[in-house]
Image (cartoon, rainbow, N blue to C red; front, side, top):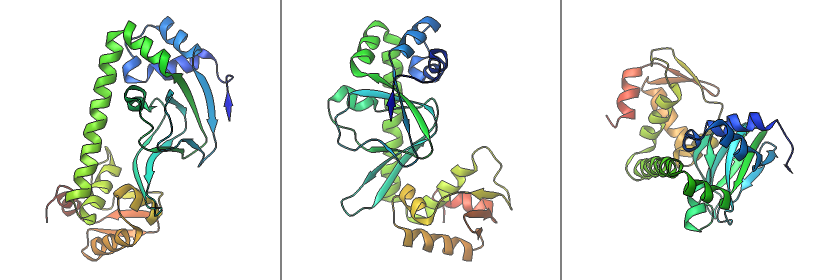
Length: 236
């Protein structure tokens, strides 16, 4: 569903201010930028854009979550990342003239702001700080994708799983008994690890049998944090 209506421009300006490459803009400039945006709401599982489609706008998430993923001809999915409020999507195709490199699908009820390519390019020309910050954002994204490629090429599934679990812990200390609520099916977890459900099930069983973790439905309980971290770092 598309609309020009929505929350006040002030709320949208605050959303834009969370995007790293817009932080150098003044409050009046952010407000003006917000007024030029269109608002779109998405239901859960609704697609924002499809892989290969022409890219004409930058999208900024105002609320909700969006999953960026690719799907093979055989239906196998690779989830690259999930973005939340304040994240921007679709920068690279705006500048290289190609289509979107992946599809973006709403995880929850989501609202996004869209900014036209012409408006963004004009902004970069007027504000070199915005252009430089945008390049920095794209460089970090390239580094992230290089890490994904490295994992898929060189890391077996148990290592990828361990890295994902350690990352899920976030800032919490990795201690015995720590419970990680993945809120994912094994198929969804496989899509994030670049593999298939059967190999995820096998890796979970191996780690459970080895005493590294135990399972309670979708929850993972860490039993041996030292071995889990060692595996995540490529150790035996």
